[in-house]
Length: 327
Ligand code: BDR
Ligand code: CA
Image (tube, rainbow, N blue to C red):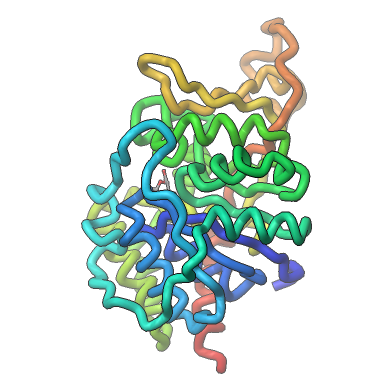
């Protein structure tokens, strides 16, 4: 691993793919703290699942906080139909020994960022906690150096034809975050759908003799059974951009806005690709447009991941799992 260890706070709604993202981050980055939010399943489960993952991985010194249990304006519509009732597929999570921190996750975020301005924020769930933190302490916008966000899409959605789950769950929160001026790197469904959870990946994880790899193999089994070979570990794709940047092979700087009012498009991340229409081979998003004139497009505010090296993804994941065998 050539990447220097970077300090991060992770805000997540620990379901199946968040768990894998945590496995990658805990081993390869310096995780300062983890805040949890209601999303894939309710907050009671996401904070518990997160503490469970820190126990399985042996990173119980990393504090885990509970944040908000519901979106800013709407009730939570969870994704237990994807992640299972408890959030970690077939894994029945026992009550962890590691306690939940008593402070609210948003208080933790504000206190930590007002004291430190060198911690990347990774978001793997709805952006509710981050938006509340920004509303309560607007100076945070100048203190968070970067947000790496799994959310949105430059193409299609999953929660609706237009919208991805994390953004769709709390569009108002996403709008606040995307308009905050904080540099954002976005890993959306257009990218994560290039990653495939395969029987071969599951078998390779099963062959590694430690508890973390066994947990990951079970999570692979869940995704395979549910999706019939078309499932992805979306949140793990996102954190790869920090863990091993070579996994993301192409990104474009785009203007991205969050739709909050559309009858059919609420929660859509509207990506302005016009600056790249006809720009250059290899950068252009659609060379057929080369001769089509268009208005220039808005100034970029987000770097959007566009292509992924799936072999490299598997290599980094399996290497990380093997390193969990080291004492
Ligand atoms: C995202 O939504 C959740 O179901 C996953 O954990 C991921 O963060 C994918 O749309
Ligand atoms: Ca998630």
